[in-house]
Image (spheres, helix red, strand yellow):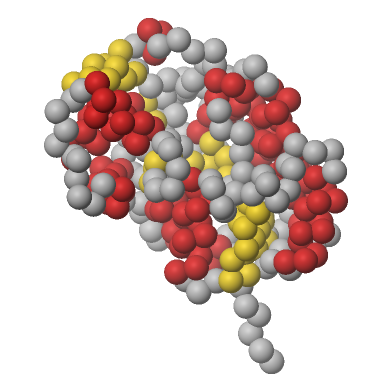
Length: 294
């Protein structure tokens, strides 16, 4: 009997930061990979169930990775319905489709489901209490999937993504430093910087062992935004002053958690892998993004 070939469908795989990383890692591992973007399927449409059903029938994936999300935290305060469409309704739709088919589903969520009142890293057992429209919509997406009690479903929370293929905080800071040689960056918000390629690799580790349930994946260690910016500038030996500022001095419509470091113990226990430290991952990214330096 011939072995079943692993075939992935990556939503957001054409243009998304995480989606592109997933495609690269899956293809490196010999998977057959298809992608869908927002030009292929209108995720905001009321007919998204039928559209995705047609694509699933056409592509017949063994695994679906949902790397589509409404990630503009500020704009979500102005467009909560748009955030809900991508962050709650889409995973719910994928869950209902998974319930009637045989594919495994991997969905990604965020540290913004927490309120930041803890002083120690958040575990998968901690109770979410999101502060923003973005955070609430992502948490509702998690709940929608969990309420379906699916087999072969993995929910992965991550945070503070940087990586190749799309604009991100690190790239923005480098651009500001090149232009102005000075950047004001918040120092009283602390989280888990995460390299998209590491997240993709660790995700595949969970898939390879058939893991189910809720996990946290982020690079080891913690940082505030100012520390992350300073490390990037130092690695590239840029002449740039990073000016630490309070979050209250940075105009914002959305309330962000002051502390949202993720505890990845559940991931390490099941895979025996501890994610590497974020400064090490950052250096690899910068070498890839700026091979000739600046």
